[in-house]
Amino acid sequence: MKRVVHVLGCFLMLVLLIGCSSRSGDVVPGIGPATVYAPAQSSTRVRVVDVSNDTKELFDVDVIGMLWSGLDDALRKRGMFWTPDAPNPPYTMEAHVLKYKKGNVITRCFVPVAGNTVLVARCDLKDGGKVIASAEYKETLSLGRGGLTIGAWRKIFSQVGEELVSKSVRSIQGTTPMGPS
Image (cartoon, rainbow, N blue to C red; front, side, top):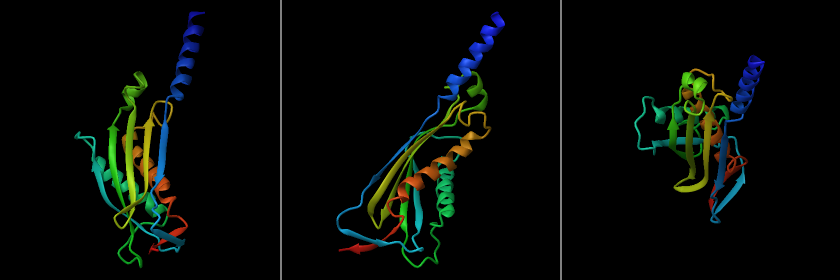
């Protein structure tokens, strides 16, 4: 009887842990009244110009480089990655790592909340010097959601980069800047 209770208790604990993951994000369009937008051309491009670590912490991984790569890869997938031969000037993107916790797969198994991998980042999409969209995204990899992945600390940067690009470029998909009216 005790064994059945222990097995049920473990099962219940596992079910509760599976629900302990979070994803959140929001986009804040910043299109001003002085800009007129026309239908898109396939030449719309975005260039990542800066990624900064705003956590004031030093990590044993390159958080700046990994987020930059995640953003570049997401832009390439959408065909929006800027190259020098592009006919129009690119939109620019600046990103900030706001919070990062590497986590650990072993700790996640025994003390799930303590071993979570967490990344919070924000990006601003600019047309010239004007912010036209901002997005912030938080990704947590816990035991129930990608938590048994070894190297989750690498995977999380590409996931966050993908979401930031998705949220921020919504405002320009289907539009190309025409300048002041």
